[in-house]
Length: 66
Image 1 (cartoon, rainbow, N blue to C red):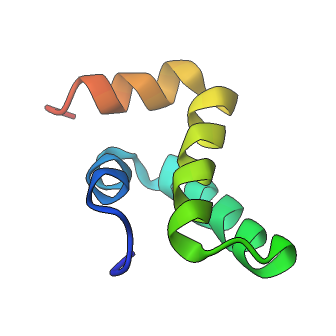
Image 2 (cartoon, rainbow, N blue to C red):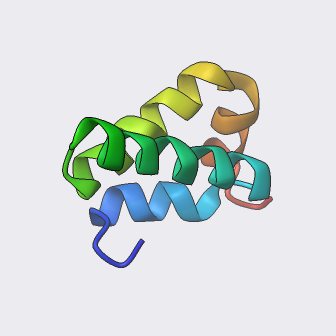
């Protein structure tokens, strides 16, 4: 996550272990299988995780006390 866009990195840091794993997995697939640049793959993967797990992801992103 060292080359992540700062906004993506901030949001990814808030995800719990399961959501972060899902995010990292999706980003890696997009990067390596689709040839998408890593920073864009991470941003798109974050959107996919929010879309697939809206309640859990948005709860983590909105409530930063978790």
